[in-house]
Length: 456
Image 1 (spheres, helix red, strand yellow):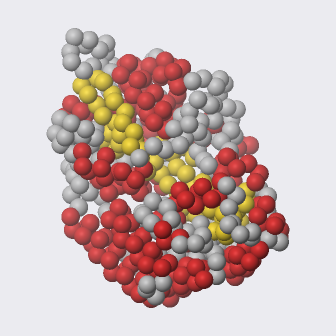
Image 2 (image 1 turned 120 degrees about the vertical axis):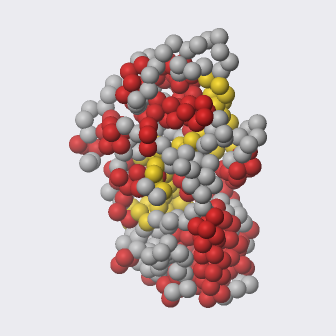
């Protein structure tokens, strides 16, 4: 469906989050009834149950509310609305943690005063926790209306062994962006296209990067590369598909020792001598490359449909190299909710009630509009206002799975960036890097399978 096919957008003013809270609390009895819950006046004499929701610091835009710039503001609004209608007295606290502190915020809090009850985050970070046995299945609160409102692909990504453990709220599609002015300065005008997400062949990629390396002014670099930590490493993983590697085999294990994987690793290593990356990229974080791109010192960097609008017409878009017949590929980052069992049945039920309330509230679901909403209804209401919506929707067939069926994504990521770091430093060959990645990452995958425990 294109934006032209969407029905007229529901009349909405640019209200603040406070206005959302008031609106969401009104009519909550009907919302809860549709979710299979019963609303009743709160027992004000009872001590409220404390529910702790944790969320990583994440930027977020909403097409109809300029006051929102972080997703934690949306979660706060959800919390206040839920408190206002809950039949059980509840105090919902929202705790924000940094993106590189998932384990500190979640695993290290189990059983303590700050033990997590609900988590909002990115699937590739939070799916690991399902296998600790602490995350509860949510099938009993998913109404038929909610299930039909969310595409099957997102339910598949939310399901482990037939049970839904994560509730998708929104998604972001990641591609590469290039600085048009830097391309013009380097004489690469013919690669600039408007209103499209391009795909370049391996030969074209090499031409672009070699030309940029020769023609860019001192202190300006062709393309992102980093390996100082696991932050952003999923984008480097995607680059390893550049020569046609599927990255994972049919069993969900790394298969980079195949010729296509070795060729991609060799290209990354050769890029150091050819001047494709910023100097000493092995010591850079993804944020370092982000800063260079924002400052006009990096020609090619990763962006997604939620962030590309900040650059306006100054950037063009291209898929990551790879895919069948040089079709290029992109990745999709899904974000949503998990409920944790910390041993208190009341909190588990309230956590489920919180999610049921949110997903049966059109106003709360509307706050996923700013990127690719998990809700078809939200997309119909706001798709024609979401920047680049049609462009990224038309590119969805290029999306590849960058996690496989891995039960311990975080363990694999801790291995991955250390090997890439050694590759960039020239301490290992591409063949050695491929062998180490396959052996060590597959061992972590197998350990994850062996140690996996699912909540009943």
